[in-house]
Amino acid sequence: MDGSTVGSEEFSRRYLLVTPCRDEAQYARRTLESVANQSLAPALWIIVDDGSTDDTPQILAEYAAKLPYLKIIRRENRGFRKLGGGVIDAFYAGYETINPTEFDYVCKLDLDLDLPPRYFETLIEKMEADPRIGTCSGKPYFKDSSARQIMETCGNENSVGMVKFYRTQCFTEIGGFVRELMWDGIDCHRCRMLGWVAASWDEPALSFEHLRAMGTSHKNWWTGRTRHGIGQYFMGTGLTYLLASAAFRIIHRPIVIGSAAMVWGYTRSWASKKPRYADLTFRRFLRRYQWQCLLRGKDKATAMINEQQLPVWLESHSSFRANSSKAG
Image (cartoon, rainbow, N blue to C red; front, side):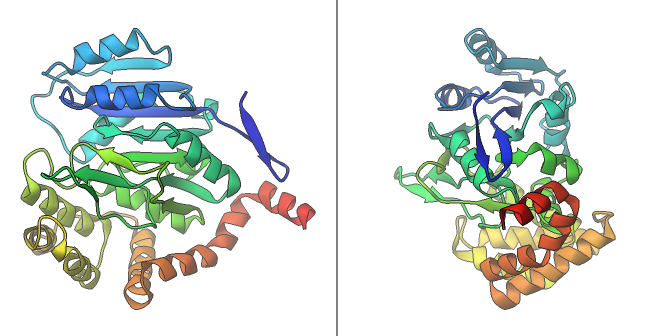
């Protein structure tokens, strides 16, 4: 088995990809080819077709005949694209067919990405070098009308939702993904709560093209950004932080409208007294972290909280602590 050592810790490189998709014929070939060309191939790639009505099933069948690690699961067409929790339902339709202990890493991968050839190998190298990294990713770019590469807005403190790469142990410890909007924010904050590190990097080997720009939803920018505001409310984000986030994004595409939609989604949920994520301890942790982000900036606040949570991680990973003591 391909592997390397860090100190006395042994690492292997068996990774699982799980891809929920629906009606992705426009982009599927780009993603399939970019995975086929990876320097380190996945041990298994499960694609869950969530009831596609376009040519997606035919394209998937074509590639399943060529890629020995590719497995297709077909779900019945419900008649519409179910966002948020529906994506995670489809993810688990694939994930629950495997034994997680057979894989060292697991990735939720969308079918509208073009990844550089050393993408997964580079992520694994970074995680081998730092056993506290629980989830990570590169940075997504999209092309504007002039074919210029524009980086989508995303902080260094999270892995991005369209290609969530996890150490399987970390994914298990945080309880996996919640089946609600903002699943891709809650997971990284839960990582920090448990002392894991979540990160993303803007590097040539990790920067990838997102063929469908983030936040556009399946309808339009307004719908996508409104959903983001609704999701922030559900997660437990405070109003002050939400307004600051909207102000920061006001110059990002779509200018003004995107920020207004975020605030509308959040305040509408608040006025309607919609339910919030039920874990009160999590919400308190999130609010403390967000206040530190406002006061210190995200990078300093994240470094501080990662340092504060180190004892939590060490307490739960005694083998690493013992090996560190011997090395010292």
